[in-house]
Image (cartoon, each protein chain N blue to C red):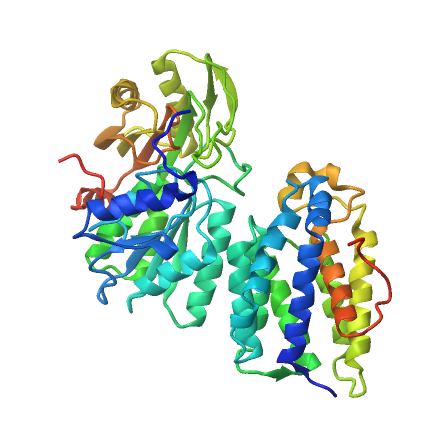
Length: 331
Length: 221
């Protein structure tokens, strides 16, 4: 696999440096702790919303730092949880009297390291709480997880909490919102190809030219089953039914729909998938209030996509519509 | 009764670090039976940093020293073992932040806090065939001596090492239920848990470091 890389060991550091250089007004970068944070943070009148997971899922979550989204991100190496001292420094430097909210995707490494850092920070009197995101309906447990995995639904938790925090919501209020979003969001993904972490140099799993992995995890963890490649509409139907039936959604629901590319699928194909998802929503009586088609939570250069449905109410519709600005932008 | 000083903790940690480095291969071999064969390497990478940073560690109190060890271990021991071992040192350190010497009763409380921390962080309970199955009997043994004014610390250490060593054989045929080993469940039967062996070997090495003849030998290292 050909990649744009210098020394693979510096891959994450060089990416972070690039993000910081591209956003000199908005972001600050602390190389010792892989920490990217908003230049105007911490703000004493606002809860700091932070996250740290493995790298390799960009734009999640490092490129989701900005007004109305995350205040800071502290990623680990590719597909590795950030170590405890990164988490601790992130909390310490973003500590605000109103508190710090850590949004954690449900993976054992992320949970353990953040939990430990939170305990250390609390012992020093910092007001910090955490929330666990677990929106993936594909499997109950995996090689990286007890319980469901946190995947693209993470974006909606960040967006809603980021918007509410910007308006001055308290830490407990943000926990309530995070809980609401997580309880109403469901995701499932499918892989057409594997992916190659730069430092590893070879694909993390084998998959035939005519095969797909249904329910794949964003670190290439196995999903529900290996299947033969089939038409796009049939793939969407399977993802849609799994997600729809899990909550379950019901006729009359107002929803946000996300078709998220896993890194190696062109946006043209993502819109082919969205077309079918929109048809299925209509057929099931769902009203699409907002749609998101593009890359939000990837798995390096994996070809594939995930489908997310979020049930909305007036509060969430309002929070999703609030202004936000992040490091990835096309205008 | 005698107190346990910061210097005692330094000697113990130093001996434990040597255990981890000397047994890097052996602990990984034990882990290969049912885990992903990296436990020895992970543990050694953490304790190697402890050794390298030895002269710069904060020695203002027992707690400060243990909290520093906690940070190094959590940061440098790979996988889930880092935060689990790191939490144990952190919980013990938090109870001894302002102390340069402690009583046996303090030690028992610190060990209890460490055990609770490991349970909370890793979700394991007694009987899951993890390091808890060595640490809990050690804590219970120490508890037996708490309140005995004539208890000899050297005897307590020897007895603690002995119960940890016994745990190796006692748990060998159990099925591992937590950690990486749990994915391969039955394959763990017949092989001692590397975490239990590590705790026992460390305690035996600490005995030797302070001139106490251990009751038995745990390791081939």
